[in-house]
Image (cartoon, rainbow, N blue to C red; front, top):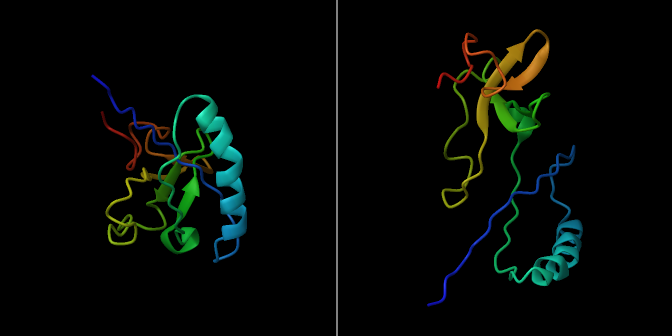
Length: 117
């Protein structure tokens, strides 16, 4: 019996430009292809899209670098229609604590946007 082992990972790049540099994306894909194939995997699907980071107050956590929506600046959170349905990008909630931008996992539990698990 054969089994399929799909592996998914996200590579992000924050840029001040609105347009995606598709030449750079294509170059990255071609450079990754032999590395992926070396380990017995096939590069079968890649997808590139752009999020308006400033518009949605999306930033990187200063502790773990996870992308998050700063709910202090965008209390409504991420508009679910903004990210395509078939893309499961993980963008946490978060906020500002002691002058640092932190995702919900790095905020203290007592913080209003902190993770309460």
